[in-house]
Length: 118
Image (cartoon, rainbow, N blue to C red):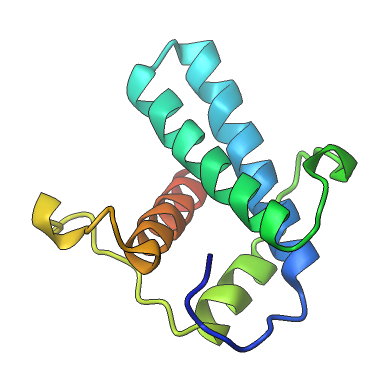
């Protein structure tokens, strides 16, 4: 899904980290019966499912962890020069849902904000 043509050599680790974030968010959404959080979880899941498919990684092979290693996420963001959104200043028109790069930025920004608060 990344628009960058270079190959990120830690893609399995990145996908595992994002998948574990999805599991964390999804579990909290269900425990708290929070529909907004559930929608965020589903957005993260759709992203990680597509990334896994594009990189021939089976999500069923990923072990769920209590500790989420975010280093591959930050390395991926840096490697691809992805500028995260500032959710305190974001406008709905800032995200073009037809652009893969905007959707990726949106998902990774959620991952960043969620993991900084949990």
